[in-house]
Amino acid sequence: MRKPQKAIDVHKNSAYAIIVNSAQIAAVWALAVVLFVESNLFTCIVTCLIALLVTLGAVLDIREAVAARRKSEEADMLTDMVSQMDALNRALRAQRHDFLNHLQVVFSLIEMEEYKEAADYLEKVYGDMQSVSRAMRTNNPAINALLRAKLSDCEEAGVLTEVNVSGGWKELPMEAWEMCRVFSNLIDNAIDALEHTPDKRLRIHLREDLHGFTFSFANNGPAIAPKDMKRIFEPGVSSHGEGRGMGLYIVRKTLESHQGTIRVSSDGERTIFSGFVPHGRKDSHGQENKSA
Image (tube, rainbow, N blue to C red):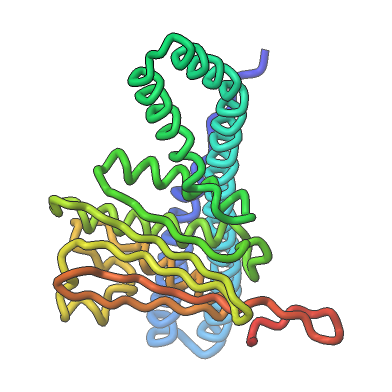
């Protein structure tokens, strides 16, 4: 009987590979410098050639480690997206399955002239249906699933969320999981910002027009300090403690890789993160042109 294999931690292994190979490069060149000072010309040349070969191998290993780390992150995001879509699908199937039962219950209550009970029952059913329908605003299943999952997170955190969508958001110029990654980080950032706000509110606007896709996430949390505004999209900049501050950096890098933009405005009333991604047009040769 074969023993179960342990899961490979790609993030940890890639970090080790980068550190070890970087140390290897530093050590071999430090040795080369010492030999260059203390040895003859032939030894120096041989040492430098060896150092170059070692450096080349280490650089290739580092590049592969970085690529593996990136692929692992993409796989994690795809797994999350599939899980969210599966949860949304189950919720929709459950609502469809229970719809006739709800009608029968309401009809029976009305027949028995239990109007208050019928109204209370309808209010409860409407609330359950609304929690799903609020997310079903686009023609993109992945974004709908992400919105439903994050709206649930907002509800648990006591954040009153309003969602306004125009356009289908289907033919994105980027992978759906990448846009979900952007939205996920922006919503998580808003929930963090509203942690100590009594009346927590978040407004999400998604709009599609002839130029591209525009979105904004506005919360009524405390204003961002002016000194932080210029650095807020830099890695590691966060007011929520050590090891945080990568979310907004990921948002900026993801959008910029598709010619998109992200900006922030903040005052005493609200903080707004707004972004834009242009349509991916196709030229006469059928190639995608993202400069529109």
